[in-house]
Length: 159
Image (cartoon, rainbow, N blue to C red; front, side, top):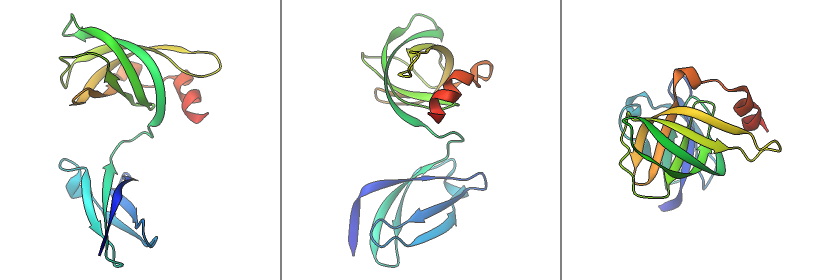
């Protein structure tokens, strides 16, 4: 039995089906992962070839584009917090960033996030976001409903 050290990201479809691909032999299998929706998003899979590998289940509705952008946040609710951030991924539905200083952000906080895209126009965006997850200095956010669709961001993500 071999064990792969890499973690494979698998995007879950609307019907909670995901296609798993063995990194060793390339065998594919589509399985339901509905039972993992509110639980663990990492699973270990054993292929018929005996390779054991780790899969990160990605339940997001929108593809997240890896980026390297600087930005700034200011808390709206509760008020009083602000700081510089390093944005690592962005999608039509939200962003993921790391804070550059100690923070006291928690799930449910509402922020104003100000950042500039690295497109040819240097498009500046100011988005209202809700903190959805906090993992140390990494913060995952969703755009609020009133900020959800942005044509400039849509063009950036397609490019």
